[in-house]
Image (cartoon, rainbow, N blue to C red; front, side, top):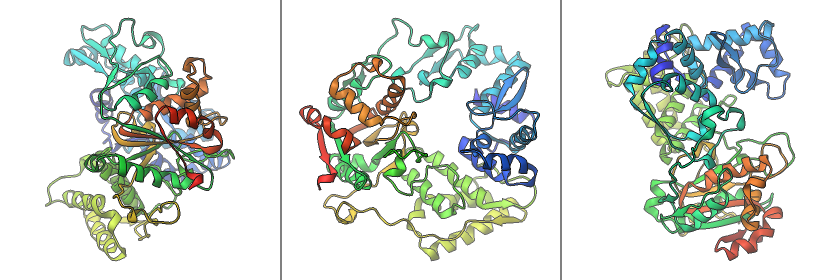
Length: 522
């Protein structure tokens, strides 16, 4: 839909697509909001709790034969004909003309393109005689409607593959109609996992919320562990996990697939409950690709470099760093700098030389001292001006020291451990979907209703062998994400739970062969 319908539709209007990325759109929208043209809208969102989400979530929807601006999940809190409504629409269309889109925009654009050019349908269906829909459980109703427009009445064979227990999106965008019958009665089951062995398979099987599922682990013999902590030891959870991974996972495997730290939520909200999110365990955690106020380029380079080295998605890391560079070097006139994919590759061109410097940043950002950083930013300034061929405003190029290395409980630096430690890469469970890790740590987070904690609920369900389908919907949604995280590792799965809630299940976990460690007792 993106490649064969939405992108051609945009390019047919003479627009060069710079990015189709929610985080890049968010950065651009916040920057554009500061212009005087949007003063009324800016004043409104500043008075609202999480008001910037109205702007950063502005999305195209195809309605009554045209593209209209709505919110990502609901209508804006003001009518389209108001000053705020007009300014929001203007901001959205300005970014669209600059080639900056959200993922969801592409479906609305594709739907409009199909409606206005029905002759495309037989051409596309003839081009694809067989279609494989992977991750069917996360195919939204809008996506499926588009697929039906093209393939439902064609001879194309459509094969759907997925696991309803691994859905990561809310019910708001859930499938309806015929797609909701997935899987069909008699659908082939694939119960064997070669990613992990029996221990991890047993945990995943107990956390299968949507459909009862007995997973047979045919992969490496793995280990399951629980780390119990309190407010004073929450920051010890990740270093402890890293040392466990260094001991349990073969070194070559760990270097190839660094340990991952996953949580359902990124940042803290207004609740006093603890812990709420990844940031409770990893102070200063910055979600990759998310804009932060006055973020220095070197911080973006370090974050992208960490993601690059993890091997999780090297292209995404390079794209995020390039977007940070574009934010640091802004043309004073005309359009912004091109998308990464539009940069020339020849070293004889500014684009090719910028690519070389980009790679240098990805490889060495963590090791730069102030002098080295000064040298590379000078080179970047020269090449970016040549690339833009017009004056640029440079911001955020100053050097800032890297955060101090984490220490083990008791103040012993990690580097002093007898076994070399591979730093873990933090992120959301949702972002890790489909990945394979050597070791995975799932951090306890507050579920979306703010009343229960996901890992504690998962431990309770395993210990009590309760029926997942009899749980509250909010608990099911929280545990379903834990299931997705628990199905990532090959060798080591660790769950972190607050001691006050998790201690009661320790004996059952130990009897099941789990390694239970209480960090408050060390």
